[in-house]
Length: 156
Image (cartoon, rainbow, N blue to C red; front, side, top):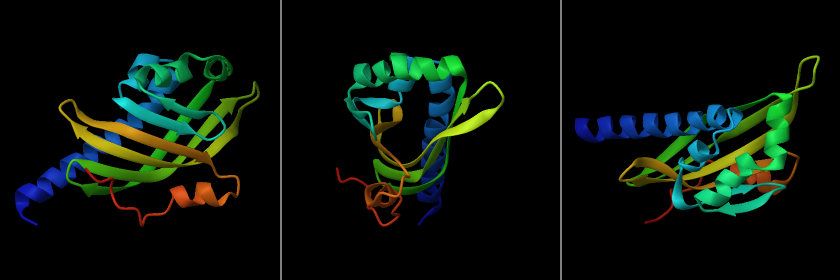
C-alpha cells in the first residue's frame, strides 16, 4: 500500500472512531438532531428490544422518546468502543461493545451491555452510519454474532 493510501486509511479510521465516539455525548445530552445526523438520511438503527428505526426522524425520536428521556432524567452515560474497523473503499464496518450506565441515587449501575455492528458509508458530508445493529449480550447467539470480526464491509 502506498503512502497516500495508508494516510487515507488512517484518516478514515480516525473519522469513523470520532463518529462513533460522538454518539454517547450526543445521546446523554439529549441532542436528538445531533444523534440523527450521525446516520445517512435513510439510515437504520436496530436496537435489541426496541425494534428498527429507519431514517433520521425515527432515529431522533428514540432520543426524544419517553424511555430515553427517563434514562437521562435519572442520569446516564453511554460508553462506546473501542471498535475494530474494516475498511472497504467508501464502505466500512466497525464492531465493538457499548455499555449504558444509569445513576441510581447512590451510584451507578450497569443498565445495558451490548454488541454493536456499525455499517458506515463515506458521503459528501464525511462518514455516516448506514446501519447500526445493537443487541444486548444476554447469551444469545445473535448478539455474539454481531461481534464476529469475519464480516466483510458492505458492498457498494
